[in-house]
Image (cartoon, rainbow over all chains, first blue to last red; front, side, top):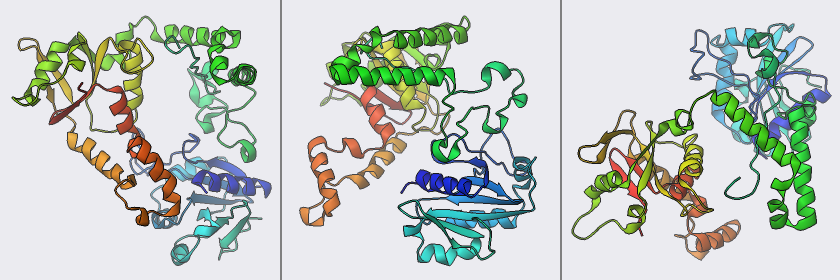
Length: 149
Length: 281
């Protein structure tokens, strides 16, 4: 399963559960929204991030980083953004016009690749959404009880 | 299109450009960089809106291609396409756009030809003479063409956008036939800054951006991870067997990095401040 398929499956799932998609990105899509660090050089993309999915429902916002395999740096990146404020200006700008109370950061990956590595890293993020080969989706890790469905 | 007789068409991605180019922040699709995407994200994520006139024209062209191939087969069908109005209209539109956007500039004043220097092949051969000795003389392939087109890439070695630009330069300035051998001029890619020495009728290549032939070689060496030909049969996994069989036929062609393949295919030579590669024979 490619990253594109993971992202598209999650998009379809979120939309079917009435989430509003703010932005999304997958390789070669050209649709991603670039978020620069505060006081960043907007002419260059150094240290910029492009979330794979940003979605909203009932004043809850979720940021996804998706992959076709376990990749620990993604978990660490989400954790850093969650705990820091380096990208707050860009995030506030992205969500301007939307009513948001809480933001959660998580990971999307194929069910077949959610193994010991991602289970050990789960504590770094707020949720892990898994995609099966037949595109069914489930929340493999959701300790905060985010109401995805 | 002139060389192969097969349409090569470009279509604009639907956008707010036409109506908001002077006030982009007010365009209705500002959140998607001015691009008009299909609203059905679940089904068509990342796709352009199908309502746009350019997209409708593109679908018409695709339908014409399918009809032509179904009627006459792939080769004859493809050859018949340039007679059809759908393709001629788009080709005319592309030419009008080219003239409009050139805005009076000559071809050599625009990218990628603005990065090109055309010299007598004597300059190239004098430069490459440093690699000749008693036991080796460069062959006739390069010498038989009077002129050489040097594409200067004053940057660190990498792929995108240079492979595409190299191919474009080939078709724009060197090629008069269907294969890379059908050239009136040599095509040489230069990673570095070219300094022309008219007195000595040669060139110097200066490093300003960290261009080194070692980067080319490193990329090729790294590709060798995909080479199965050094393995014994008992070391191959079953799914590797068809790939081994293909490599036995084609060598390492399909296991090299794409930009290495493209540079090696199109360029008669690749020059760096610290080394050179060239075609011979």
